[in-house]
Image (cartoon, rainbow, N blue to C red):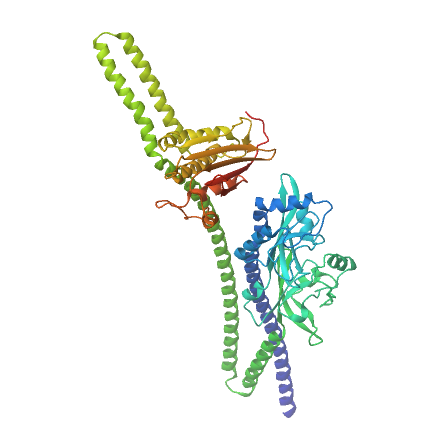
Length: 610
């Protein structure tokens, strides 16, 4: 009997141990799977947020590199023989422009490199670690951009010793690449968007070198051993300074490491290895991969709890009469636990799907907003043109009323001559009426051409024709105001790369502003001078009015700034944007004989005159 009871106890203990092992195995894999899914979700969320942050800066170098103000320092540097290292003051104006851009965009540093990789101007030109005068030709982002591509690269700053992500784009003059514009982004923003304190994360380059980590001891170490060629390439670009790049795992290749959901990692601070659940997100566009790590000890804790719970239930089943009820209750509790885990997984998956849907909707709204912005800009230009026509309405009315009054006089006279049977005189009057009718039609056609929207198909305009059209529109106003118009030689061979209607709109706006500025002037005069070289065409419009002080000249192109009591302050702003859209410039200066002088500079068309 005792032996039988002992055998029964041994059998129950054996069954209990077997069931405990099974429960531990199942719990371990269940918790590991849940931890992996949760970690994958968190890593993907970090990747999406980081993608969104970096996307803000990825297109900026390409856009800013088109600014014509960057050409002057690069062209001046190319003209220096022999080349010499620039000083911070040599291209101070360009550095100030880059500093202004950096403040607006929130970038760490924006700098301009010449063809050899030497920094000519930088937004940190006044700081102790200024990039001005230093050569970065060995950096991959410079080599990619100087060859005509877009550069992006992570590295430890040689001067600042600060980690950053670099975006670069070539600066072109015609078809020649003459420099590179680079934006450095401080990756400390990752600490602001990572919100999981119980998980570790790292960001590694394509070689597996960790350049950002929540675990300080992993920084600038490799996930797998690097080859001699890989180390040589990294040291040549000075990407991580003199870091030893020691491996953290025993895997020989990075692909093998990424295929394992659980890996052992070295903890240099504690001088031992620990197992982690691993999840990763490949950010191919940014050239890096995000890895998330969760200690496997969390799973051991759940396994221990599950085994202890089952052992307690099993013991109660063996010792109590109500073992069947207790067993059923334990199974129900375990099923509920599984249900909660599955529901949590479904909830996490649904949250991810909703996040993706919201992201697609955000992108769609952004594209819609961009289209509406372009349409609004086009309508604003047209509205400014119609506003100018509104201001010219009195002149239009006067030009049309004069021939209409003459036509009425000729008509009344013809009726009297017809009664007297003086048919020759009637015929002469009808000829005059026809001539006046053609004059009215030409006046209306002239303003109709000015009022129409830009064609956008042919951006080639004869500058002399546009100047004549603008002065013709304002001819009556000039005569009424008693203004002497001095127009220099207008060569018919000079063409500009600009739409005729929009170019004429700018000229009319500048001439109309000059007429208003001469309201109280003695012997008012307006001058127009056209001159050109092989690359650019310059149109100067001046008046002998009161001119502008320095404060007005600084703000004259600012939206809603005006010197008129009834003006909106948009005419000159729109005019400058029109000229900028054709890669030109619109500036204001003092005329030597008094008054203001506006200077329009546009690229000269290289095509033959039609």
